[in-house]
Length: 145
Image 1 (tube, rainbow, N blue to C red):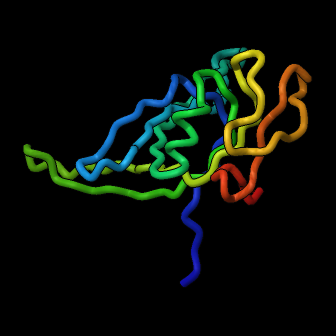
Image 2 (cartoon, rainbow, N blue to C red; image 1 turned 180 degrees about the horizontal axis):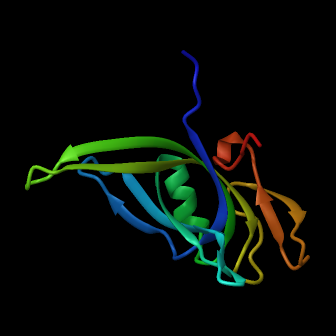
C-alpha cells in the first residue's frame, strides 16, 4: 500500500530553539511554530494561533540551532509519528510527534540577517528588507512544494 505520512506547516517560531542531547550524544532540538487560525466569534472574526511542537535531529537540528530565532517565518516538512502508551494510572495516552525533515525560511525576524548558514540566498521578502533563504538538499532546507 502506498501512502503519505507528512505534515506541512507555514508559521512563525514562538521561541528560540531549545536544545538537548541524548544519552548517545545526539543533538535534539525542539521548536514551537504558530500557524494562523481564524475563527468566527459573535459578529466578528478572531485570529487565534494554533501551536505545534516540532522536533529535529541531526543536520536539521544543527541548522536550526545556528539559524532559527523567535519570530522567524518558515515552512517546514515533518514526518508524523503517533505514539501510544499506558501511564502509571493505567490510562491509555496518545500523542502525535512531528519530526522536522526540511525547513525553508520565508522571512527573518531579526533585521540585518542574511541567508541561513549553509543555504543559498533566494528572493527578497515582500518587505524587501532582507533575503529569504532557500537551499539545496545538502543544507536540509529544500521543500518539495
